[in-house]
Image (tube, rainbow, N blue to C red; front, side, top):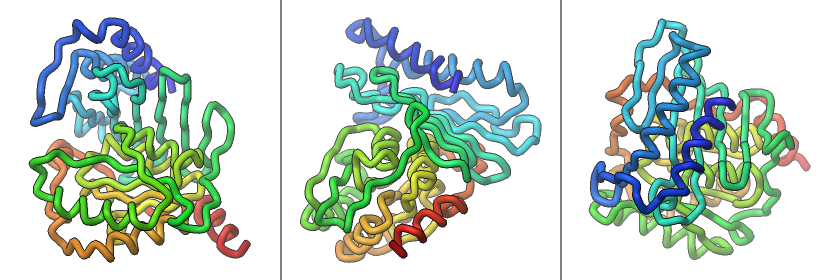
Length: 292
């Protein structure tokens, strides 16, 4: 938590001088600012002061992929929603996931503007500022508010994405595109949203948020219902009933296997994570909801 707050302080200070920030392009429409890098530095230094041997995998390049061999890795997005931040649209966050021996065990998504701290530990539940979270109790897609993120115009899987979006839009109450995947997932965990799907994300975009959803009683998978969402970046996360309908929408879109060709750059930078299913506590809650 102290690491997320350290990054959040950098973001709030940077927001006061948005117009003068140095900004570069990683690729078309993918921006990175000096605030991204400064936030990452603050987060990493806070972590390494307490855990100097732990492995680090962070969006803007801070890395210590091997660490001391302890098996613990921190997966960091220092500013999820950079474009929002630069435009003064205050929907952005710090996202930090913790992996131990290949299993995602903890996650924090911190929204410094609203002071919202979403936290989860595997098997212990998910919380917003100390209050336990539970996903919404929707009957299915017709009642659901779904969030997503648009691909870059040149993305090879953009046509497949829009086929899926069309099917989701036809079946749900409405669709939102806020522009920060970590917050979208946190909002699913909190019941503000009922589902989320997106293509070709990186692990730092979704690691913490995925655990939040699971620990709040939701379901997280890749687009075919498997467990490869962290290693391939194609994700569906929702309440149990809405998740089933999301997967049906993907099937109806008939996008085939082409979407699965994406390989996140993080796989070449020492990613140590596997994609486990729901924790025991989440499975138990889902079972109770189904029986009820």
